[in-house]
Each structure stands twice: as C-alpha cells, then as structure tokens.
Amino acid sequence: MKIKAYLKPHCGWSNGVRAILRKYSLPYEDIDIINNRANYAEMVQKSGQPLSPCVEIDGVMLADISGEEVENYLLSNQLVTPTETPAGAPTNAGCSDEEHAKMATKTIRFF
Image 1 (spheres, rainbow, N blue to C red):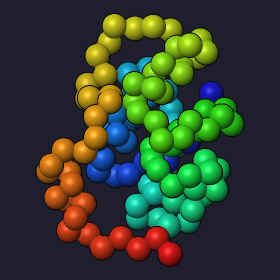
Image 2 (cartoon, rainbow, N blue to C red; image 1 turned 180 degrees about the vertical axis):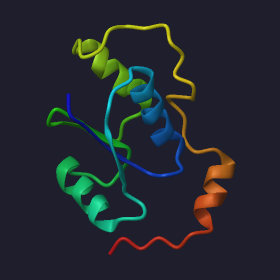
Image 3 (cartoon, helix red, strand yellow; image 1 turned 90 degrees about the horizontal axis):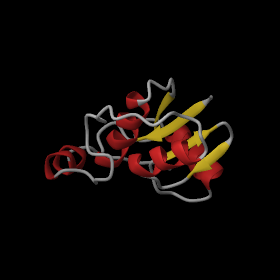
Image 4 (cartoon, rainbow, N blue to C red; image 1 turned 90 degrees about the vertical axis):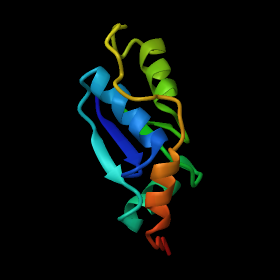
C-alpha cells in the first residue's frame, strides 16, 4: 500500500492521521504542507480543495479527513485488520490552544 499524507507539522487533525497510520504500522510519506509551498499546491491540485489533512492511499485521495475517518476507510476497504491497539493520540480533534498559539507565531505565505 502506498500512502502519501499531506499534513501540518503541528496540528491536532494531522496528528490524529499520524496516530492511525502508526497504530496499524503503515509506512507513509509525511508531506509537510506548511513549510513547503509546492507540497501545499500539490495537495490542492490533487484534492481539488485547500483544507488539510489529505491522505492519498493507492491513488485514492481522502480530502479534509480526520484520523478516525482514515481508520474507517482502511477498515471498510479491508486494507487493515481490526485491532484493539490504542492510537496514542486523539484521532478526531482539532488543534489545541497551545498548537494554535505556536502556529500564530509564524508567518506563512503560500503564494
């Protein structure tokens, strides 16, 4: 399985996606959309929209998705076997106040 995850370095939603991919020990490419504007542009072009996270699994783009939704996709398509292993992080939560504060200190220019 080939997985490309378009994620923010510090984001509750992105961390939820990472937690699910770790839970199932799935190798994936973690693509930083904040510090590399070409990666952000690629995500927008592939997903047809500007919101993240986006996860591409074997050519299928899951746009603006939570870790919980990624897990549901993987299970419903029998790409992984159900497990009781905990994810280790919230899988359906936005950024904490601390994460928002950290991001607010950086100037981000995509174009």
